[in-house]
Length: 437
Image (tube, rainbow, N blue to C red; front, side, top):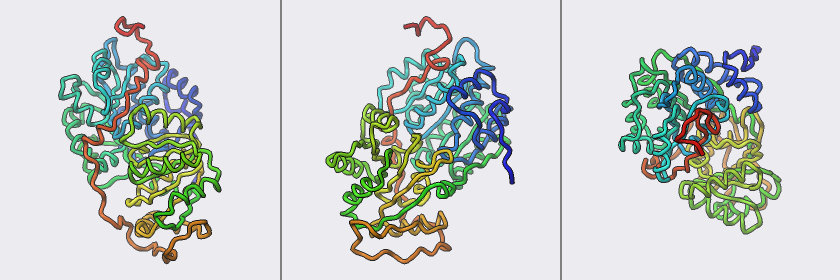
């Protein structure tokens, strides 16, 4: 079946947004943008099943900006709320609002925990039209009387399944209980997967929604060259050095299961002359920002990250993803390797598998319904022979119990410093004596 190509001009976007989109270098909308923007502009609720890297942020940011531009008055108030699970994703969403809305007079900001709330309170008191927030800090400031959600006209819930995984679902329900009723607001609901709890939440929040499903979870495996290396746990670091030397990847993302593991990996690589940094919840925000910017700019060859820190990480040109530790949730494997298959690009994903992780490999191969090619000739062969091929017709995992979701307080403590992102677009255009330099 031939797919009809459309342009942003055909999506009924206003000239100011079209200008912002063009200046950002975008020519054609992605499928999720093509299918979401028109009904969203009509005021319809949306339930979108789409993973990171499909253009989902623009799919909700553009209609939110256009709808609010037609409604706002001279005094800003919170008319749109975007709820997101992590500080990195929140900062990126805020940057997208600044990029697309740079020619509009709309004020927006992002709030999250782990930093002092004084500057955030000051900015909120000046007034914003769009608030991007993580659940913990949002509830904190609501409880302090700094934020009211009674005037929210558009509510965006992004990465709903990750909210569930991180233990945020009770907080999300507390937030949504403070919003106007679902018939009095527009809700745009996005999730990469739709487990029963998320479907139930969608039913509570959405009114006669338009359902949009794009980029099925398993699609990145078709765009990524995958390899599996069997190795003893004690030899993984030496194997990583060997692989980095042989592959020649210029922008490599290495996944560690734990924060301490990420630090140890980065230390070993640094000692061997690799330009590397690690990001995880225990790093200061300044260190995380420097590492991400260095990785984006190409100053760092290797970034070592935990899954939580890398959720929503949007960096072009990642040549390799290396799973130093295999994830014990097979869906996480898909999210990881998708970091190097952004927006249809190709990439290489290399995974190390020690004896204890072999059940995880079975779950992954059953989920993606294929055997990952094995690399048996390398300098650190395992003490045990490679396992028999996975029976792909078995039920997908997980093989072990799902780890307990991180506590809400711990997740909040890992917040990012708020990027102001611009008032009324980038830098602000509405005259306001309170904000003059």
